[in-house]
Image 1 (cartoon, protein in one colour):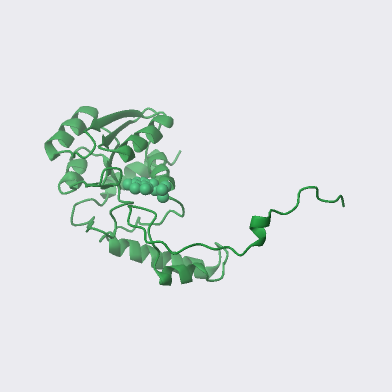
Image 2 (cartoon, protein in one colour):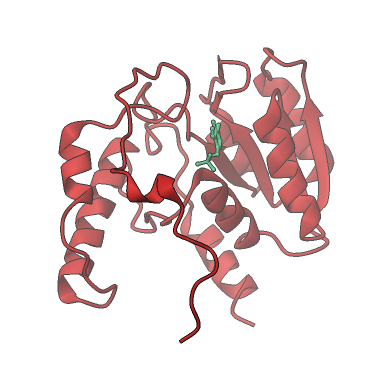
Length: 214
Ligand SMILES: Cc1ncc(COP(=O)(O)O)c(C=O)c1O
């Protein structure tokens, strides 16, 4: 074997040290010790029976925090961006209409993602720090007839918590899926999906299954 001409970097020979910091921003945030300890548990395969049990427990936890009995509840193993892409790419097809509420960067980002897959994207723009009224949202839904309406619940770039009451019902009225980004709000403020009339009705689930069965 030839000799290594590049020596191991001395920084990698030192013990790995991460300082304790108090983080008060929208994210990253401090992780409780109980969660850190769970991260140190042994790794098992994604097809081991215990994993299915763990995933079911996670699903029950998510149903609890979102206060929903919707059986189509699951965790996406990845970042917030991964979940946004997963939601948009699995509900929108090229050429379809998407409406994004933009009152900060997350609405812009959702609009970018939908544009990249060739959707016809319309935005409802309000200045950063602002929010949309129900009548403004209804006007845009009736005009653009989107398949998906995106809204950031906790718009972390401005600190705005967007009101959600009534929007689920509006989306049912215009037969449109409601995609809510709660990355920065979940756990900090109530988000009661069933009470807010969000669950997909069986006809919408049927439409989605039909759309993606080809
Ligand atoms: C409102 C909101 N949506 C989405 C994201 C993206 O999450 P991630 O950084 O995990 O990709 C963030 C991250 O700060 C966020 O605040």
